[in-house]
Image 1 (cartoon, one colour):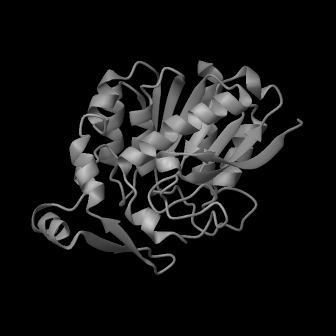
Image 2: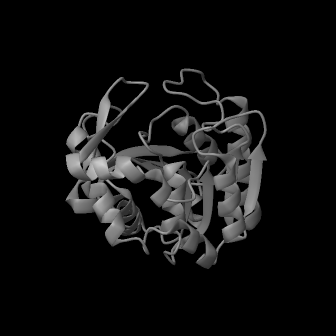
Length: 275
């Protein structure tokens, strides 16, 4: 099968540039384009996401994966948290705006008019919110969050954040203390309806597929169950695995871990059977 991968940039929220990869499959233009959205403290090249994209491409589906514009990476350093100010000023609304603007870019530049959204963790929540776009035909969530409000500090911690205007969370892999400015919460508070994952699930009119590790301690399996129930979607509880289905960063093996491969094969099966 003749396939092509290209890397380019798009303009997202607040006009910021983000990098993306586009894997074109032979005859892939006949199917909706798969769009993959990474999670919190993630990026498009984290761990096994390239192997995942290659597997989907080989199965006959074109796929794009993007860096969200406020994830802390830059176009020149797409795998490094080099812009901590952007990270600190990020937020769920900006990520939702990124998806809409990215779909616009793909439609204008490549004439794709239908899309399938795939998101991991926080990205799983974002694709559920973005699923109301009429161009979206399916939604696939890997270990998705089911609530944005619950991800913020609560009670006294929230009041401290309001006072100090910033709190830091350590990236266990890089050792960096990543800032979170209080403006993230203010933006959420102004847009609670737009950022209500439960409401998005209950009103979605397209197929939703949820894949969740039974031993996930980062986003509990109950969250995936709620997403599936609210959306009347299909839930796959993957036994003996956690939040990333055995994947890690860096991932230097030529193949995906067994559980991640299981998830990707389920995604491909659902793409093939539904379309």
